[in-house]
Image (cartoon, rainbow, N blue to C red; front, side):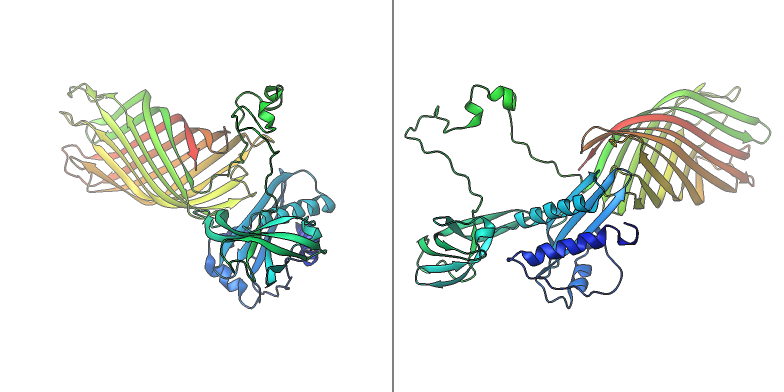
Length: 482
């Protein structure tokens, strides 16, 4: 969209179509300030109120066009001024037609979808006796003898997070028979109403796309009334046990998942007068529970818990027991801001993260004492990114890296020094596979090192000069996006 190559002609095209539609009056929006995207406005009614000030309109449209590696994406939002909430939304992505004419056609499709989401199609303009005038005409497909339903809207059903309409509850309060049709107006008579005077000026009209069935003189359940599923060739046309196709909405709230891992561990502690104690485990199991909440399209809250069991041999000569049990616990709470390369959650993305993390490796005590239980914790910051590696976005690859600012290390049951200088580094490689709109697999190769240098005597018999834990693990798991 460099220099408005797409946005300007599409905006002008949409304005012309709105002006041609007799159900709408167009008002030019002479707003000032930064250009805001639909996603920014969907989550902040205060911004919607600020934008709508001075518009002198009932509603306004916000649109976005993006050209990325997978094609062109279009998004159209209709906001209501009265409550500053999103009323209707339509979008399309991965368009491979890049010419203006094709994109104008797609824009018109989105505008039609926006209008179809509204719970009524027209209004009664006036009533005298049983004669009424309605704002529906030939352009709306109205003909003489058409029967139109007059409705009362009882309840609007909105999306729990984004507030756009997902349905409505309506009651038919009467019927109008059209007797004369003009281009944008029609004239008719009330032939049925719930009670006298129920239909009046501004009464909503709906049911222009109602469904009709062929008349049948039989009450038999075997009489299909022309149902295509009852035809002899229905299995060829529809398959076995067909169901209605309903488009799945993309995930909007977050994701949860679990991973199983196998890792390698190497531990070291240098004791004064004893020397270096080294322990290792070539293959230990771990399990990770992971969760995300997408606060907004850009901001995300993360939580992670990892548990592992790492038995090792006691490396100190003459010390007992000979085998030491170790248990690993890692917790992580963080917040991230994501930079998106496209409108879909499956497009390329880079996330900057900051949060708090804690690592604890419990170790059995021994006589003579070798290793101690160590707790590392601190403020972490870093980045995580991924990008599709196939055109269909099914496979992705990524990486992450984290650093810790002024981490703290604590020991038990004794301290190896009066003070310590701790460092933590974490990085890894990622591979993802999309299974569906709500399921994905992820594998990771993770590297982490926790180390500390000691000073002073501490509370143990032989003070230590340094200690380190090094982990290399391969994990894989499944995530549910909701």
